[in-house]
Amino acid sequence: MKTKKILNLLAPILVVPILIFLSILALHHYSKKISPDTSKDECLRIASEYIKKNEPESAIYPLLLAIQKDERDPQAHFLLAQTYYQTQIYHLARKECETTLVLDQQNKKAFDLLTRIRFEQVRIRWDEGSLKDSASLKEAISEFVYILNNTEDQNLIDSIADLTGGKYKIKRLTNDLFFDNAPSFSHDGKRIIFHSDTNYFSEDYGLQKRELKKSRIFVMDANGENKISLSSLKMQNSHNEKDDSSEQFPRFSFDDKKIVYEKENQNPEQKDTAFNLDRDIFIKTLDTGEVGRLTNNDTYDGLASFSPDDKRILFVRGHPGGGSSLLILNLETKESKSVPFKESWEEKITRKPTGLLLPYCPSFAPDGKKILFHAGYENRKIFLMDEDGENLTCLTRGQTDNFFPAISPDGKKIVFVSNQYDQDDLFSVNSDGSNRTRLTYDGGEKRYPSFSPDGNSIVFAAKQNEQDDRYFEIYLLNLKETISKEKLIERLEEMLKAFS
Image 1 (tube, rainbow, N blue to C red):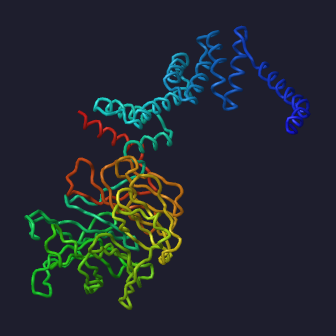
Image 2 (tube, rainbow, N blue to C red):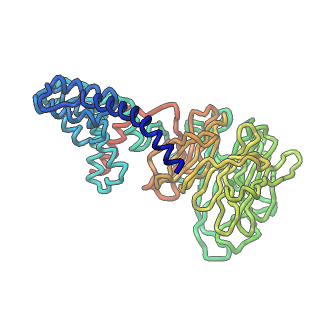
C-alpha cells in the first residue's frame, strides 16, 4: 500500500516531462514528414540528411518519391543505389546503379559502386558455399576477373585475393615429388632446414609387409636453391650394419652451429608393431659432422628444439601406455626434467577420451621462460605457459582443430594451422589470444609453419587437394608483400582454364 501511494504521488510529476519529450519528438518527426506534394528537391534534401546521419532505411521513401516525380534524375537513382547498398539489398542497389549509368555514363562514383555491389553479390554466394557446380564457380570467377579489370580499390583486390587463395605472396620452394615436411629457418635467415621422405620400400615388423617411408634431413638456401643433405646416408651403425634409419624434425641451434633432430631406432624394442615409433634425439655439430645421442629410450622421443641460450632441449616423450609429456634436457648435465601440468588446470587441457594428456609440437618462447604447444585429441588447442607449469593460457577457442603452433621472434604473434573453415589454412593470433587472423584461403593440407628471424615470412609444408598424399612441398608466405592485381588476374584465369 505504501508503495502504491508513493507511485500515485509521483505520477503527476513524471507525466509532465514525458509529455514534453513526446511533444518534442513528434514535432521533430512531423517537420520531416513528406507527402506526395513534397517537391523533388525537398525529397532529395531530406534523403541526404538521413544518409548523412547513417539512417539509410529512412532515406528510401523520399528517394522513391523523388524518382516518381522525375524518373530521369541520375542523382536520385544514385542516392537510392547507395541506400540499398548500405542496407545490403544488393539486387536493388545494382538495378539503381545501372539505371544511373544509363542516364549518366560518365558517373565514376556510380561505376565504382556498381563494381562493389557485384563483388558483394558473388561474395555472398561464395561464402554460403552455394557455388557447388563447375558452371557456377566458373561464372563467379569470371565475375571476379571483370571486377579486377575495372577497379583500383586495393581493399576490393585484397578481398578477392583472400576468397580465392589469399592476398599474401606465396612462393613454392621445393618441387621434387617427395614428402617435404617440418621446415624452419636458420637464425641468420639464410637457410631453411627440413626433412624429406626420400624413398619408400616394404619392411616387416611382424605383420604383413607394407610400404614404409624413410626420411632424410636437408638444408637449402632461403630462396629454395642449393639443396643438400645433412643426413649420414649409408653409414655403418655400431653393429657394422648399414644405418638407413629415418631422421626427422631438425631444428637449428640459435647460433646456427648445431642441429637437433629425432632418429628412428634401427632395432626397436617393440618389433610387432606396424610402424617403428621408437625414436631418440640426436645432436649434430655442423662444421665437424660430429653426432651425439641425447636420449636412449624404448619409446618415442622427438620434436626437439633448442632454448634461446642453446643450453637446453625441449622435446616430446611418448609413453608405452599412450599419451605423451614434455621434457627439458640440460645439455651440460644431460639430465631431463618433466614439464609439470597442474592438476587444477586439468579441465583446460584437452585430453583423449582415456584421460591421457597429448601435448605436442612444443617450443620455447623467445624469452626462454614460456613454452608454446598444442594439446588435444580431436579439437586440439594452442597453449602458452611458464616452463614450471604456471600461468597456462589457452590461445584458441571454440570447437575447431588448431595445431602446429610457432611463435614469432619478438614473441608477439603465434602462427598455426586450423580447420576452422573445414580445410587446413594458416592463422595468426596475438600471444594473448586476441586478433585471430586468417592468412591463407587455398585449403589443401598444411603442416608446421615457422617464422623467419625478421618475422616477415612464414615457411610451411603443404599439399594441394589434387596432389598425391606423398607430395608435400615447402612454401614461403611473405607477410610484407601482397599479390598484385595483375598476378591475381593470372591466378583466376588459370582457375578458369581448369573448367575448360
